[in-house]
Amino acid sequence: MSQDALSLYRRMVQGELTQRSDEPGLQDLLDSSLIVRNIFETDLYLVADPFQVWRYHVNRERQGLAESLARMEAIEALFATLPARVEAGESGVSFLASKDDANAEIIKALERARFRVFTSHHMVRPKKAMEDSLPRDLELIERGLALRTIFVAESRGRDGEAMWATEVTRRGAEVRTLQGNFRRMVLIDDAFVVLGDYTRPASAKTGWKVEHDGMLAFAAAVFEDQWRRAEPWMGGELGEAPTETVTTPMTRSILSGLSRGRTQASIANELGVSTRTLTNHLTRLYEQLGFEPGDQFRLGRWWATSEERHLG
Image (cartoon, rainbow, N blue to C red; front, side, top):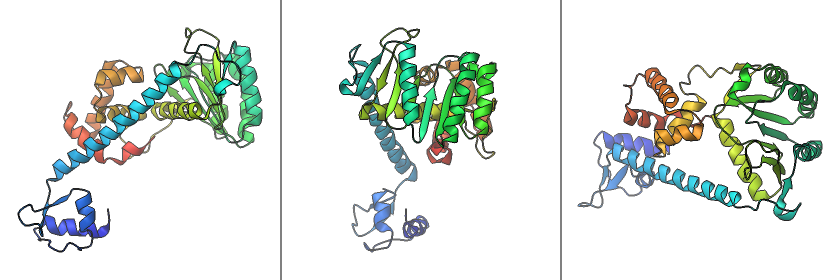
């Protein structure tokens, strides 16, 4: 909003009547619904109830988020309907019949990689596997590639992942951990992704190589959502949040869901935590903000204007 609009709004709140339709900032205030025309005297303007205006804009944003989420779910539903096997190269999707097939494709793609390698592992990695992959991953960092990795939360207590995280983060890579279930993938540049095979049991060693532009964009969006909800892991420890920040990635995910009208139970299910764990996160946030426990209305108003909603 322009400075003219803010200045005019302050004067109108203090009782100044505005009649000039060309008053600087007037159109901005009309567009934002902060002021309205007097229905009895159309050349006069009145200050609207700011709470009603706030609720109008929040509801409109919620509707936009709901529509965006519906589109994402439609894309995921479309992906789930792909046939169990697609011949190599057809529609940019290829079936990987074994772990060796997947590794061979990943190695070829890494040789061509130019700017980023993002991976997420939803199972604990063996120590030997971490030791074997370390030289290759350090070489990727030396080549100037951005390296991001998401491990399961249990990895923090295991030697293999802790050793690997310490070495790669010292050289500029980023590592995070995420509680609950999430999607495993290897995303290389904007050209290649290997996904787990969700047409079979979770223990299956099969997968899919995807080079279709639409599916690549969807996979990147899924990874970004998981990354946003994950906790930073620097050399085996949680990264410290800025001192002025009261939320965590977990509480931001919870608040984002609540702002879209989601229930606590559905949010907990999406995040892979119990409703009790979710409630504990909210309770700590109420205490930090000095709000009465359970005052979701006040918490919602704070979240709607907080800069922390823009954090990852």
